[in-house]
Image (tube, rainbow, N blue to C red):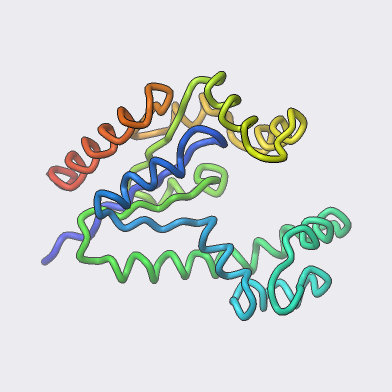
Amino acid sequence: MMERPYILGLTGSIGMGKTTTAGFFRDAGVPVWDADATVHRLYMAGGAGARAIEVLAPAAIRDGAVDRSALRKAVMDTEGLLEKIEAVVHPIVAEDRLEFIETCEDAKLIVCDIPLLFETSANLWLDGVLVVTADKATQKQRVMEREGMTEEVYDTILAKQMPDNEKRERADFLIDTSEGMDHARADVLSLIERLTGDHNA
């Protein structure tokens, strides 16, 4: 009987280098499922997410697709709407993830890139969790360089995310991008070798 793939969760707070790290896995030939990209696709015109949200918040739909700014306003204006949206969207996202995993059943390792991994208890079904981290100064410098970013927005984003130190404590694996992206890439390659070589040993 063929071994099933090792499913590794990838997460990290804003500005830690998670997206770049996910790219290192892709570059090495590892299949990567991206939660944010999946939601973006499902919210496009004709997407299952857009159809579900149209029932709950029709004002958030523009030309058949979800208008994220209109959706945010609807969520702020309507008590309980966020919970209703999550109740219908999360299963659709989960179904997409399962379909992705099934198409990659021949792989030894699959990465699931999930920004709110611990916040949504995804760690309960994953084989292991990799947290991408960096020191606070590096994190803030990266984020503040983004177009339109302000201190207020930065603080609001951080307040919604689990603190980095708590994520690190709950991680099975850590990659610190403060030491440079070449170092992070080397760490990714080392982890791939470790997980594909002996995870069932």
